[in-house]
Image (cartoon, rainbow, N blue to C red):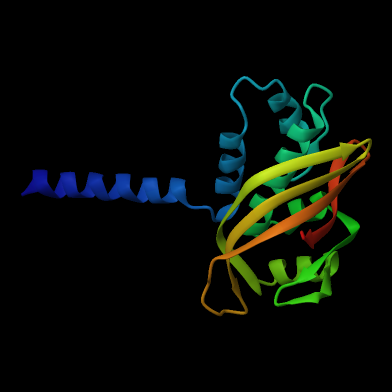
Length: 184
C-alpha cells in the first residue's frame, strides 16, 4: 500500500511540474519562454540580461531582422502574460492599433495598458508565423500572422488569427512598436 501511494504521489508531482512548466501564464513562464527562444550560443544573452524586462536590445552583433523578431516575440509574451511594464517598454507613447471587432476605430497605448492590466483582455496562448522584416535605417516594418486565444470581458476565449503589419522605430537604442495595422 505504501509503495503505491508513494508512486502515485511522485507521478502527481511530476505531472504538476510538467503542467507548470508548459503554462504560458505568469512572469516566470514568460521569462522561460523568452530564454527558450534565444539561441544557446548567442552572445547577446548577457546584454539581454542587463536590459530592462521587455525591452528589445539593439545589439550591434544581431541583424535588424533578428532584433525585430526578438522584439515581436517579447511583445507577444508580454501581451499574453499581462505584463504591462514590458508592454510599456516595447510600445511607443504614440502607439495605435485597430480596435478588436471595430477595425475602423483605434486602440491607443493607454487603452491597451488599461485593458490588459485590468484583466479585460486575457489570453493563454499566442504564436507568430510567417514573419518578414523590411528595415530602413531606424524604422522597420514587420509583416506576420498573429494567432492568439483571447478572452474579452470574461467571455469564453476563442482563437483569433490576423495578418498584421507592425511598424517599429529604434528609440534610444531599443526598438519600440509605434503601430499595428491589419495588413492588406
